[in-house]
Image (cartoon, rainbow, N blue to C red; front, side, top):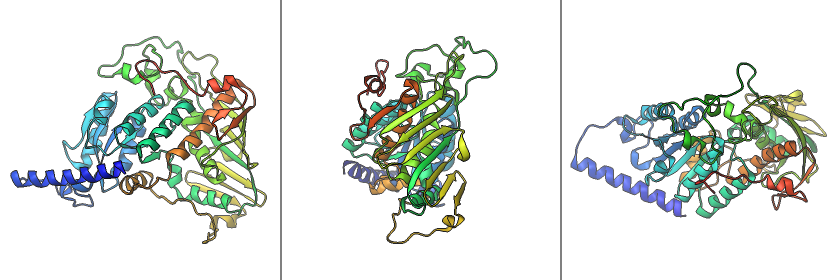
Length: 438
């Protein structure tokens, strides 16, 4: 309710300010500023700040800019070239001078006119950036994966609920009709009783050629490396440490591709299993970790088995099985396999299956960023809300912990803790370097 009132107040004040400025200083303005060309007038736009505007961050920004009633008014990144590119992207839509480029995320969040914040920074920053935005009264769109520890996820979930923020997780496959159709087949018994879900995602990598000594190097001019490290341990600069996808394979900044890529498909497995608000009860797995790399220490490949209270088994692998880079639901009467841009099933008639009023129908969205903007305005729950995000993201963390410990673990999905395993429970959190903290 507080956020709803804040947005209405900001909309009123922007409209009043525009009218006053127009009366005092008549001037020629772009047609887009008046709401022409399919763009809403300034007084009716959701104003957005974007934190983390590298490759994926600019992709999210582009998706937000496709909404006629949304405007990106500020972008933030510790890399000056990323700030400049994202600023140009936003100003190409709404005009020169319409978007500020800001080095420090705290200055962006302090801007009162901003209604919502998108976060696509490095993984180890996601939760801290999101918490700062929520506590400042902003709604948030957070790229996947959600965080680098389960404790972080839980703190963010509590804050989102406490402040009444609208939250969208960047698992955009939920806004794709093929994934939705596969999940509805599984949930409505068209496959018979589902007993197995197979998930496979791209494997990680370590440097294969060249030196792996990673000698310290000078920090590039204009790059705030200290802020890039943030809550992670202090470490000497090396170009490989700060580029995507290399940093995905460094545990100080990420959980690796098991989460960075795996979260997309694990999230769909959760959706089709009807376990969005819970999790598995047992986990066991193995992984291959770099043995001769001085920087990378996350799993390169993995083979993890998870079991749910409903009897379903989830087999989560890297580049393995008949469904590389996708999700396969298997039941007593058939199967369906879905991946980006494709779907297959046996029997084939399942692909044309229709659902009626008595069937379970899933939340329908055809544009992930647009769904977020609509929910910021309506205050309704997004297609990937915080409770769902935490449960899906947690599975990637459980897989990583099971691989590192090398033993079968029992998980209590209600209490979100391991049963009878102090070592595993200690791995639910991570320390942060001062002055950063949850």
